[in-house]
Image (cartoon, rainbow over all chains, first blue to last red):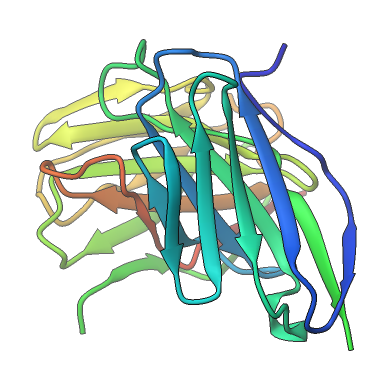
Length: 113
Length: 113
């Protein structure tokens, strides 16, 4: 079992719809969770982080964390073609010394206009 | 402007040559990281450093070396011992207080033929 798992996609949604991206992790003691957006050929950009169970909203983005079920999700409301990118989930496992993150392989999102 | 710079953007080398990738940050971040990304894969940690003059191996350190002589700089050398060096190399940094939030430079795309 991979430490951080994401559906590779592509996930296709129409413009204006809600895109839902999911991520599961194996280390139950993980404390910190991150979503990065990566456009083709570019470096990852941090867009959301969440530390506590529940929802965290920032503009059109909502991160949801459920530690009991060991999953974290990212919702993008009113999806735009500019949201088309690969979304990477990253987790800081409790076992890791040194503030390391473990990344999933990413989900490709395509927003169709 | 505060940020992380990596140079060069593209680098071409012949097999058997060592090559050094530059990473500089002026964010006053304590921690710095080197990742490698291959097509369709997530980020894999090569080396990381939490303070000057100290660094630790990541998951795929073989064939790589680093130094951390200054807080601002964390160069990565890809040696001839690295069997598959062609990849997208990403440098990241983070503050000691919120070290899990890593921010990335623009990356260096290395091609070895």
